[in-house]
Image (cartoon, rainbow, N blue to C red; front, side, top):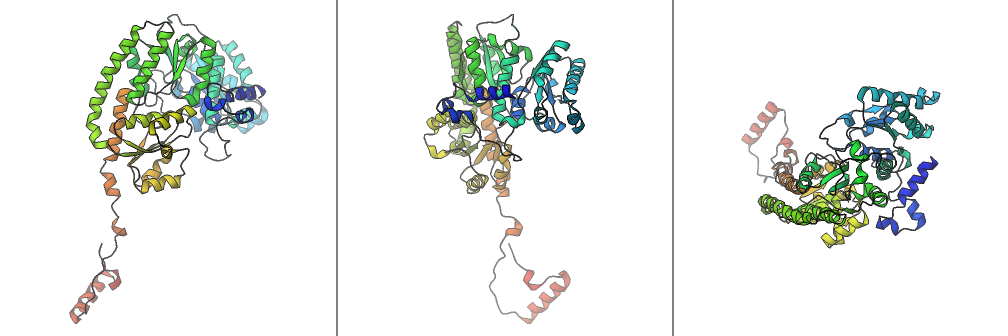
Amino acid sequence: MSLLRAKIQDVFNEPACEQNRGKDAKARKEGCSKPLTPGAAAGGCAFDGAKIVLQPITDVAHLVHGPLACEGNSWDNRGAASSGPTLWRTSFTTDLTELDVVMGRGERKLLKAILEIKEAYGPPAIFVYPTCVTALIGDDIEVVCKRAAEKYGLAVVPVNAPGFVGSKNLGNKLAGETLLEHVIGTLEPNDAGPYDINILGEFNLSGEFWLVKPLLDRLGIRVRACIPGDARYVDIACAHRARAAMVVCSTALINLARKMDERWDIPFFEGSFYGISATSEALRQISQLLVKKGADPEILGRTEVLIAEEEAIAWKKLAAYRLRLEGKRVLLNTGGVKSWSVVHALMEIGIEIVGTSVKKSTVEDKARIKQILKDDNHIFEQMAPRELYAMLSERKADILLSGGRTQFIALKAKTPWLDINQERQHPYAGYDGMVELVRQIDIAIHNPIWAQVREPAPWDCQPTVREERPRTRSDTVTLHAVQEFSGTTAGDFGEC
């Protein structure tokens, strides 16, 4: 645990983060995320964060060393997609019981599980995740993994990020440290070239990176490693021979990008593939970094030609939606890179942003948002569910873009909602992804169901007040006959 404490403190001291540099020594030790409340749905633990970053490595066996519930709570928790291997979707756990804990059989059970996975699946590597239980009882994961690697002849990687050490974001960074310590640089590629790059913090949600990779292929740029989206173990092991890197989600893997720059001289920049302008700018910066590292400057001209062609196609497709969506108001309740990249993307076609969350956003993200919106009143750190509901029910926004946690607030307020977080079903990256995002917003806003659900229900209608007139004998006889037939009383009659 002392080694883990030292690693956590090193992660907290992140010189590539402007916000972290501005803190004093005491504040820096506390990290960025607020402490978790035990028993609360606080958004994930360090174990969960480590699995998020590493599980999309598709040809690796991911073995959770702990009780069954830990694996069940984190399995397949992202919509990442694979173009080939499916081993990452197979759930492996040592399934420790109370008797195993009492009798101290955890390490032997772990060693046996590693052997079973090797014989049954033959993966290039096995990642082993300790959990709160196995960390607290003192199972030495690193020693077991080292012994298993020597005995069985394959890479066995300890991912030392038990849940109790901190937040999900801390787990993201510890996963990056694991790759640096045990994977990256362990193999040498035989085909390294001047146009090799790494993409860090891209998870290939709904396969959206497959909309961007063809653009890079047309420029002759090879993605040496996309970490972690649709990744292979060998690609990550050879990632140290890339010439440049792009960081998509800096809050997750900024430490990985910075240390790869320090160790192997791989310069990086933070960018986004959400939106037409952002995608074009990302392609330009990638080409410029490669030229600085020795690539032929002619790639800059080819990049501009590609950008001009793709932007013309995308804007032509978006023209059909502009008239239908211009002036529509969007409330964005997300964080990280999407807090500014999606804002900029939507404003490009005339959509008004009435608010965006900056939770989990870096200082650089917040600065970009202020530059784009030019109004701090549209920026909120965190909006309480009651405030979110009030804003939607008062029709201050035409649609809510968020994750699955807040969808029911929108539905209760009878407001269109679109998922843009990890559970989404459609890819939104690149030029084609931007067109798809706008198309989905158009479908959601103009769905006729919203006009229907906003109509008052029949049982909510007010009865019609009729003018009283003197009742004649024939009226009384008729009313009594109706009551006897239907079982009603005079007070039951009314109209909507």
